Image 1 (cartoon, rainbow, N blue to C red):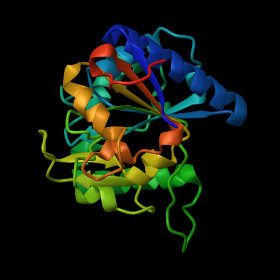
Image 2: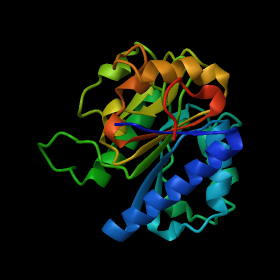
Image 3: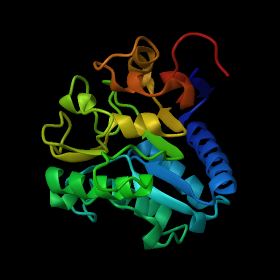
Length: 244
């Protein structure tokens, strides 16, 4: 079952998200010696990054990945990497060697190919004759769009049917600018040990309500592995029903 927590405002959502992320990363380090964290862009994750940077996480034991990226240079104002660098990597003095950047400037095809190679290496399955399998990232921080999209997986897109061996996908026709993007596949998102999905504002309420309904490609967030999903919302985005 999805764990759903509501908070009074966006600041409390970010704080709860940072606290939850810190606990999950610490558990991963205790159990496996290293934690794998994937980040998304957006306003709410951005504040969460700031709180994580000020927290107690031992970043020398964490490897950082990205859930998606625009096909722009890393210094571009639209870059998810730039946001994470300014709000987390630099303030927390995270070594560049710990960060696995999606190379959006290479374009959808080559960028996805290279990131898929990195993910396959993480999974330890880059052996001849064996199809790549999704690695089990410890924590993936996600937002949700008003249309129910997650990462750069949009409603009804062919990328949602890429299959269990797909790792990173190129997007040529995003309905949100810029049209070219890179995204983790649904298989990678579903393989994560934990996904934390953040939603704030009344504009997300319908999407949250829809994702908690039947699983459908029309609402990509509904396809996440719900038994490993933590949904953290503010009151404005929360659906009707019991709250914790």
